[in-house]
Length: 90
Image (cartoon, rainbow, N blue to C red):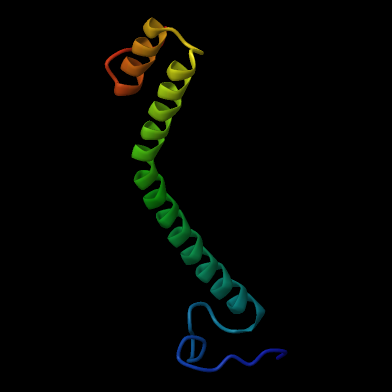
């Protein structure tokens, strides 16, 4: 065979569904699935941690626009209520 895996992970009789090319492909698919799942979990954790930062960032932008005179006081108050969850956009 063109590759020789040794060690407890890839050796032993009947490891998963046999050896050869099909067994090697199945092992690669299983490892790739585990890596994919781990990356999805890590991405989900990151998204939950940054969700509060997005609101703070939006509030800072809103304050800057109001300070520059780009929006009126009524617009500022309405948008702030939407960001705080007290109002719905119209």
